[in-house]
Length: 197
Image (cartoon, rainbow, N blue to C red; front, top):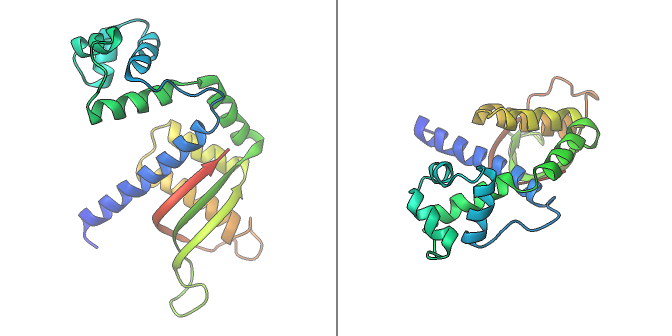
């Protein structure tokens, strides 16, 4: 595998990890986030303290564009703008609900990680040889805290990947010590990943 291919694979894995965390947070919403571009613009403008200029900078569009959506003149955003509106709206929606769930996961509740990925920890030809596995595991609050802290700190792909890999390896393969405490587990090629608080 070339360095470029490895970098692309790591970027896809990080994207899947971030998407999994975002889906977990969306599942907590007690009310649906605004759906129409106009409603999203209005909501985001309130988050920017009424400034259409800072909202335009945040979305990467002109101030005029923001004003057209706010007035209802424009209703069909480009694909890039629509993605930005959804992402920014969901990142700001119900922050207290998300904060409470994250605090609970990091302090006592933990989280459930389900994924399909390559896991390997033994030599080829043995039952422990690496292969694609479907795993669903409840990780401890300390592992959840490490994952959430890495995400909040803007972790690099490898930091976030390592935090999730360590949580799965420790809980599923090492079973919190029990005879396999030193086991090294390879976690790669994530096909899908879901997280629940």
